[in-house]
Length: 206
Image (cartoon, rainbow, N blue to C red):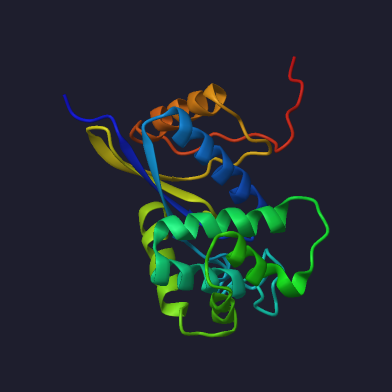
């Protein structure tokens, strides 16, 4: 019988709050299902290049800073360290608390047990080719009319499948996270299945 263990490549831009929630769900999934997560970088800045209007409103290119640091972390310390950094940075970015923005990236690196000097990559173009290559791998799987995150699932004796999302407004915990994972895998495995969508806030449809 083939192994049921699956590997999930999880592409993220750390600035996206919905991606942050999906990543927390994915960590819950890894605790209740036979899943290994590999953290990967994609970029909303790259995704929105050439558009007449940047949906992120990032006219100054600030969103390049965190993904460059992510690429530097991955190059120097690997995907597991990138996952630690994403957790530390996402907690600082997306959890409601006071913070010193001047120390945001060095403090997140320190919290992830990584050298603070890697924050210098945010102001350099030295890692842009790696960001673009990783981003291109994600969009090659799902197309460019999506956002972040992109997940690609392999293993379990089944063909690799990739998709954008799921997008969440709250994080399912424990077995609830596992049941959502089971449903996502089921839908993603149906040939021709494209999209299931509703408002970001649940509505009473009774």
